[in-house]
Image 1 (cartoon, each protein chain N blue to C red):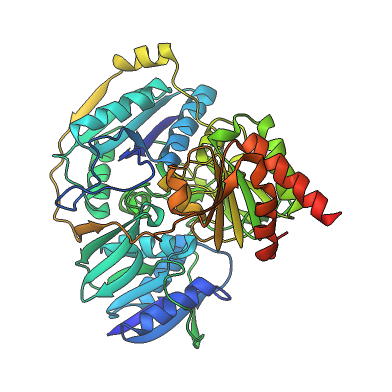
Image 2: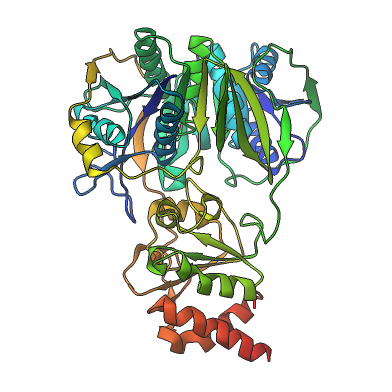
Length: 276
Length: 250
């Protein structure tokens, strides 16, 4: 089977997709340079993949976007975020990973992206540079620098998050205090951003940021699947909740039962004490 | 401006996924329904654009008759009218869904903008908006956190790495958006009353054979964790700090 793989330079997820594609057959890695232009790049990938049995990319923002364009151009089905494939049956992620789907992919070529962090990255390969023509389709015109300041949620080693149980925007002062002491970032659940207590940039979840800190401290968060989809990459999870039966407990390594408004200040005070 | 927003009825899942006996769907006996979070922001954006520029916002869904509930919800927060592409309740794959939407759009006066969520909360196919744009020959920009209509063009931003990428497209265009684009309003009581009498057209598209054919759903094996309870209330603090130290994060 001949497989064309779109590879993004310096992208770990692309190397994971490449390793997955190698289990399918003979791979040919392709890439593009210059300002990102999804439709034009997809046209170049489609042309390069003429006659290929499969077209594969990482299940990243760009990988999913490009192969959706490729599939639309070729009028073929596209399976996003595949975790395994046997014959023409794929297993793919739904609900941000809370559910899996087995589906028959009827297309030729088979067009699919590989779910992130399911397969180890493979060796890099020789990458063929494709040239995209300027077809007037939307492209990146400019970059806006990040606002900066503080520890980014995505890169933080510790994230302290608050949910409905925090109760108000002001209630986050004790969450911020503990996060500050641990050199970590503040996160929150979707309930909190929908209520306007915190900006959406702080949301951990399926429709927020997906994080993978060493420690995730979930305070007053029940643990809806929407939230777990964002924090399950954490190495350890400590849940602080007044309900010992809350769903979050099934994903947590440690738990403290009780009122977070008493527990968080006590932990911060204890940290200060042991640090002298 | 004329805007179309495409939304999808999805269950409000709680802490755990339970499937129907035939493994074709989530068991929704005890669940309410909503639309995907990204789409709530798409509806809000369309309503704001009409408030600022005049015109009309239309909300469309492909789904069972019960999806009227979600269309009425969208109209309660300001959408002017709705189109229901009624199905028998079975799930359609992304290609068939996009085909039916394209057909419906062709039957309407042209729209300046067609908005989608970047991906649905349930199936997460990441493609319906792009397929619709491609079939209609319209430019498409995806994953947006900011949209500004400037005359006959739209300027938009999406997050990439730590910063943001800026795109522009001429109208008409297709845009797919992410939650965080705006903070959607809650429906008011008068809004809910008004929504009851807003126009809702029902079409019954014929279903194409699925080419990404769902066979069954599977609940992934849980991590089966049994959380170690470190204590109750403030008295647990010393034990928590010991754990933080053992993890090397204190």
